[in-house]
Length: 106
Length: 115
Image 1 (cartoon, rainbow over the protein chains, first blue to last red):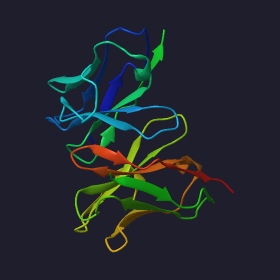
Image 2 (cartoon, chains in turn blue, brown):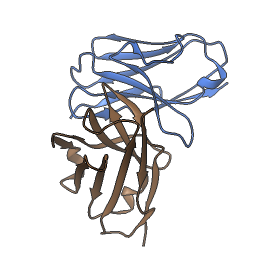
Image 3 (cartoon, each protein chain N blue to C red):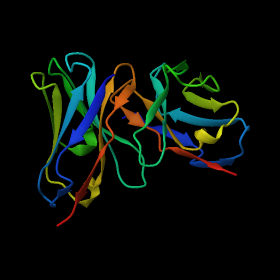
Image 4 (tube, one colour):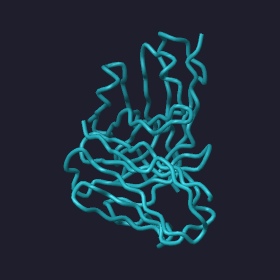
């Protein structure tokens, strides 16, 4: 099974900060990587698929990138509505999620 | 606009079978892959299984054969059954559509396993 190791598990940041969240895949998953945002009591929302493709309607301050089996979600300028939990997910083989990163207000 | 809605009992007794249905509206289950995902309270997301209208299915090996998934194209819905449940199966259960990734989700339904 493919494991996704996500870090950090939580971070504190201020409005306007640039933040980055990373997932490392335990084996090759090519471009089969997505990122989701989840707010309390709500279903996750798709932000990025195919490593770097923004889902329709997602602000351009979100971006995705990859280096080998390391995948990164970046938020260029954190907005109040971005405080949430973020998950990565691979869909190369079966499906696996990272453990999540909670982005909190500093 | 595609919408998904989970339904089923909110309380299941240990050792019994958890049964959920996902109703799909605004789109047909005769395309894409349809998934079940769960989230224990305060924890992360766990993929459970998927089904394609052609009948192709795949499930999480960690569930050790306890899971079955089916689809009813005439009702535009798909279903999940999880047998021999324990308190560890207490979670919010989501159904979702996979185009490339999960682009549509149901709101989730909390299932508590308790006697």
